[in-house]
Amino acid sequence: MSIAARLDRLPLGRFHWKLMVVTGFAWLFNSFNVAMASFTLALVIAQWKLTPTQGGLITSAQVMGMVVGAAGIGNFSDRYGRKLALELTLLIFGLATGLGALIDNYAAFTALRFVAGIGLGGMLPALTTLVSEFSPSRRRGALVVIMDGFWAFGLIFAATVAYLMVPTIGWQAAFGVGALPTLYGIIFWWTTPESPRFLIERGKYLQAEKMLQRIEDGYSRELPAVADTDQIQPSAVANARLGELWTRTFRRRTISIWTANFCLVFTYYGVFIWLPAILVAAGYPVGEVLLFMIYMALAQVPAKVLAAFLIESVGRKPVIISFSLLYALSTFLLGQAGDASAIILWGCTLSFVNAVVWGPIMAYTAESYPTRARSTGAGAAAAFSRVGGMLGPLVTGFLLSTLKGNQSAIFAVFAGSMILSALVVWALGEETRGRSLEEIAV
Image (cartoon, rainbow, N blue to C red; front, side, top):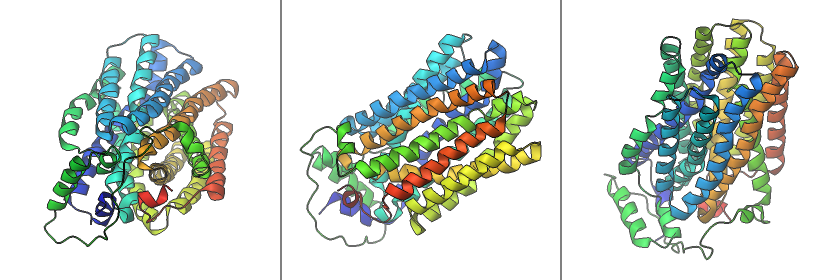
């Protein structure tokens, strides 16, 4: 009886919800670390008397590390397991962020943000792969979105910590809180199982069978019947190759996946990461700006609920296309905002649509490749997207310097990026709703 078929027929139960909490908190800490770097950027720039371009380099160094981490740890995950890869990412970005609290030097701080980025970027492919491989096919997208929903709580946590601590204690104290993932790594290691699909791919049938048997024994009711199918055999190709993503089988989906990820991250890092600094430069007090960020983070909570419903009822492709276009519109209108009320309105709208589109893109990316290359494929897409994340802050910093703070023109650039994403997914994207991972990846 196929391990994959047995996983797909499982009703949602205690195991799945426990997995959501454990992986969700890992993602929360990732969100916290990324957001904290954003919320404190204006103060770092002021304290060290940096130019906008130098400020952009701090963020770009972090994103450059994310490129390395996404590609390297994504492939590591396919070779050595999702669990070990995720543990490694928690330790890397937790330690690097905590050390950042002790640094009072621009160059050293920037270097630490690069190291933190390796862990931050490496978590995405391994985490989405793990959740996808444990999820039943009919609920896979929703579970990935629910896990992604913890990102919003990470933003709220970061904004609250920044609001309470930064004005009185300083931004270094907030970075000290960012060391918590190193402690959470202990909990994660003892509560997170390895993916049975990965174990089977590596020929570890007995381990996979024991793992799945423990999951099935956790149900108090009789489980649905499953048809006998051939057991998944270990791949003839032991390790995934990047070139496989560009073979005839996967080329169209790789183009659509890479474009969607690139444009989303380019816009997110160009707008969200720089927004606090833009508002401070426009004359808003730091405390008021951080309060704006809390409102924007809160807007993501209902958005994740909506995304979890839409991804299974409507499908990945329609949600990605429609909300990418709404993202473009919201970005453009935020650029026209001229007072605090308009900034809150369009900032929260932008945060809402961003939260809706992000989860479906994560799910679509992770489920589009075979098990032997799933984390490598997700990692390659994430690495390419982080190039956009690296360029986004640099583009914003450059435009701030050359356009004398003309935020309308700055935001129009990023609105155009999301329109491009919608068009490419419409033309090349493949719907994956309700299909097993083994069926999709052929």
